[in-house]
Length: 103
Image (cartoon, rainbow, N blue to C red; front, top):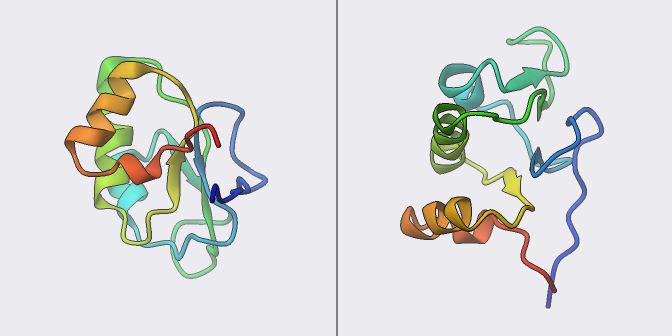
């Protein structure tokens, strides 16, 4: 059965998102792609959730987004797009479950 996932309300519109209620502010996005992610407060003790603040535009940025997906502890960063190269990269890294496939 296909699980419906809800994006955190601060995510920008686009294919990558942080799932609502999943983030524990593990620090990975802050280190691997701080230009693509933002905190719902200052990074640190007053932050409860992170979100995608900017979708990746270049190959390097997509690479950092995929690295963040691979390193994040709770698998909160999701992909809901259809780019075959990104899907192949998720499959190759063992992270295909982070892709929101069609039901």
